[in-house]
Length: 230
Image 1 (cartoon, helix red, strand yellow):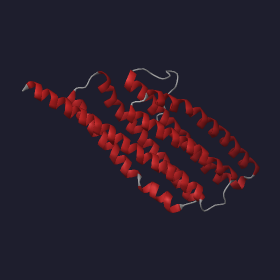
Image 2 (tube, rainbow, N blue to C red; image 1 turned 45 degrees about the horizontal axis):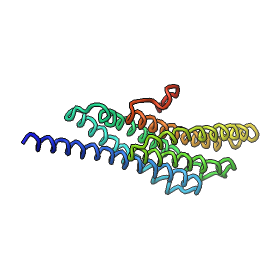
Image 3 (cartoon, helix red, strand yellow; image 1 turned 90 degrees about the horizontal axis):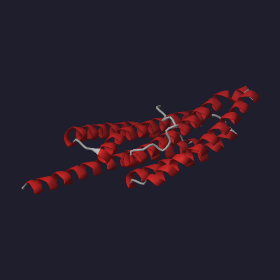
């Protein structure tokens, strides 16, 4: 009887862990879609698409709350140890990274609405490439999380340098625009914030990569890198 009860307990725990992973994956898919739609709304000057991104934010917030409750329940009732404890505790942090990613997508969408009413600057055409890289990082790191693939997570972490390089180059270009033509200042500032939002989305993808490394091996990818908080 005790053996049967033990098997049932283990099976129930595995099911709860799989459900937690599924909830993170669902949240990640939504955040990924919001980022893609926000960048598409900017490129296509699509006010309605931007509005849908903004409207979708509460759903991501709701999923984060569900993850929080699931983690608290698992910690309180299962008393996990070792890798299981790391997987459960990192789910809290990863859900926060995804919630912040969604917030940045909303910020991009709001600025896309405003920019759609003004003449387009040539510098805006560089945003989609930056968005494409960030989306690729986000997709791959979510796959790495579901597959528990540390090598893929590290590869995502290493791609962040490319995002930073594009951001720094675009920032300098936009400063030049503003100095040469003060009439572009408002549009340039919006584009600067959009580029910064994408750069932060890339940072959150690397945060998740670091958490996957810690989750599986209990070690850090790079102790010298500071995790983005906002």
